Length: 314
Image (tube, rainbow, N blue to C red; front, top):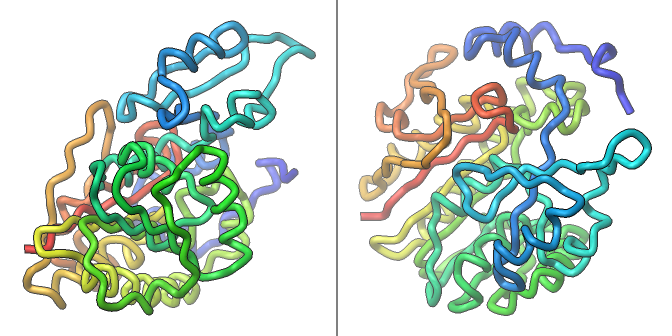
């Protein structure tokens, strides 16, 4: 395990992020341990029942924006203190899913309903997919897609563990979807992951501007394809765990300029502190509508950094 004292921020990274936020505060939070959190899987057990089962050994603190979500900490002291939430029976039986608190936001913004036809275009390993299945109460059709067979394995196992019976797994590159008509689509796009440094310091080692540009090109393909497979009146949620404007506001601005029938929807989430969207970066001015996007820095809520946007097809 890398000590935070050994973590090095590249000069270009520091320069870039100093223009986007208070870098010292961002760095402080990025080097702190991430609070453990779970989401109770209501397909198998109610929130009240799980809280009762776990309250003897674990303290659960409500996550304000998700009624099934809780920050979790063991009550033991010294040698009796545990961090291994994944070894609890509740996790093994699928009563809870270990999921970062900010990661719960995209499905909440998507707001899938029972009976709808929903696509999760980049689904593995399934945290958001299982959350969507629970919100749909296993009614309707949920297509969970990913582009590599090795990524479908954990996705399939997780869907079985949580009891998601309305879920169909598909294997293809997201950009090849054509001719479908979904009520709602989630594109939780592959990204540079700069909002997840506190979970993996490797992110800092592999980060570079060229990688960001390549990813942004892929993300534009994905969001465009998703919009083309959306019903009129349907909802598309685009999200990343990146804090790069090129991967976030830049991608959304690209979609707005390409499709006249794409409209951004204001996002209201209770109990969530948010930061302003980026309207201009490195000489590029984005569509002013991107101000409706949800940008969260790690220091805003002591979570991962996240970006979420809600788009309606008029």
